[in-house]
Image 1: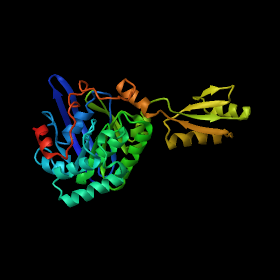
Image 2: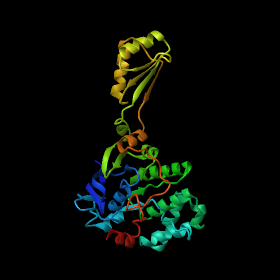
Image 3: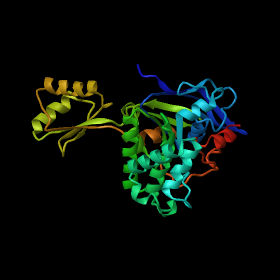
Image 4: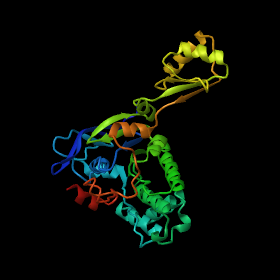
Amino acid sequence: MTGLAISASGLRKSYGDKTVLNGVDLAVPEGTVFALLGPNGAGKTTAVKILSTLVRPGEGSGPIRIGGHDPATAPQQVRAAIGVTGQFSAVDGLITGTENMLLMADLHHLPKAEGRRVAADLLARFDLTDAADKPASTYSGGMKRRLDIAMTLVGDPRIIFLDEPTTGLDPRSRHGMWQIVRGLVATGTTVFLTTQYLEEADQLADRIAVLHDGVIAAEGTAEELKRLVPGGHVRLRFTDPAGYRAAAAALAEAARDDEALTLSVPSDGSQRALRSVLDRLDAAGTEAEELTVHSPDLDDVFFALTGAPAVPAQSADPSADPSAAAPARSADPTHAEENAR
């Protein structure tokens, strides 16, 4: 049975009189992608910083385990097991891609030969070899993000926190990042992803939690969350008017379009609901020319749970989340330790 890479019970955090997290429970199985969704200021970055030992949990928080270790009593073991790519790139634009990678290798205390080998391998893996000796300031946004994640992987972490990793990227670069995440998970890495891009969570996440007003408003697979929102239906189109009338009589709850000969039957999109519709059509001795299942998407879920549409932010607003202003990377043990104090 797969164990939990990340678990937290009753996670709490306040800044003055502002409560950011108010009893958040998390359970992320190993080798999966877990997406934490929420509007600006919902506390996503705060949660990541607590789980990655950069911020202490608030009073009253329950136990936390990251890779089997307690961040409060074994922070170094936690830091050795994780990598963090924050909202803000940790890439130093004044030095080359290779030099950025070697800097991370030094922070991980890798022998020089090993550090150079790891740096070269990761630069090749992320298609950055041709640009490796150029200043990172000359890289495109997508290239900088790839370098950022490559730097995170220098220590071979088994758990990676990606805090809004594709904010500001063009669609092509965003899709490239998705391929990188899928590749990481295929090797057994656990990815904890925060994002405001609903399509991103839908594409990547095994499970999704929606954070709102400091609590988890809902959690489940993308399909489970979509079924929480009303509006799903099965659309039936007929070409035979007699067949259409027979189906309308059998499916009295359906919305009718007599001109187009279509029926819309309320449905949660489940197999059981679809089978029920087909069985009732069979009993009526009629058959639809075309059947399509329509269900709410994650945008509908997000709006229903948070009261606001998911509008991707092009830049983080530090005032919205008190912890968002300070980017951090767990690969720097000294920096991490100072932040954790």
